Amino acid sequence: MPETIRSLRLGVAGPVGTGKSSLIATICRALADDLRIGVITNDIYTDEDARFLRSAGVLDPERIRAVETGACPHTAIRDDITANLLAVEDLERDFAPLDLVLVESGGDNLTATFSPALIDAQLFVLDVAGGGDVARKGGPGIARADLLIVNKTDLAPYVGVDVPQMVADAVEARDGAPVLALSRTDAASVAELRTWLLDMLAHHRAGTHVPQDPGPMAPHFHADEDGGYVHSHDHDQDHEHTHAGTPATA
Image (cartoon, rainbow, N blue to C red; front, side, top):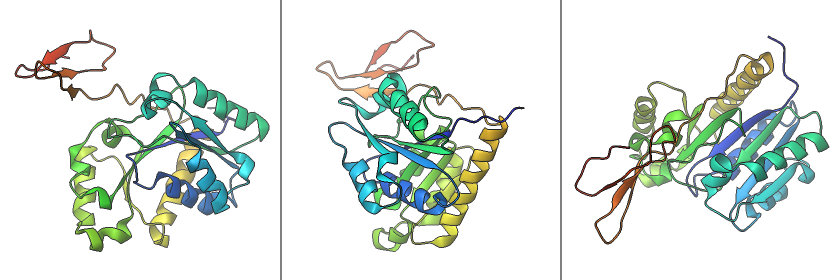
């Protein structure tokens, strides 16, 4: 298949505080000598993540741009991707050719996933400080990302987390899909991440990687005065609100 000349667009999602921005800084440090990289950050009302990355000196500051979503973070990466798609395309045009564009989601929950119309592959980031049980809770972000990262493993002794068990739980939740235990202070794990990224880029250029649709948000519960209901975002079915005490049908 013919090689593509468009950059690999890689989404980075995960809950607040899991280290998405520091992960992007680590990726830039590991690959900036070999690849031409750009970054788009997302936040609701601020460009703080972009300013953090610029101050870290990991890239030319002009290659780091911010999108202020003004709404729920996952809306701008999955439901209405216009602002992000324009930002990515502008960055690719201004610094053509780019090899890799990293799109950082605003901090969200375990349902955060990117539209395949925006990105080609996605990372989902958990951290050990969030608790060793988080990985086995599953959800679209954990289950369907191309790579799940268990971040900040150097903190595990201080928060009482068994990293091998957390990784094993994550592998089970992902039906064997790849999981990487990572610390920015651990050169071996950073090297593993670098290898994975370069492999993904090679598949993208060769046209052998197909972006996966991560699907809708998982059904979730909304409380109200009647007790609450389960809400599904599955657009392939009629939306149904099932109230507490009855099985969810959507």
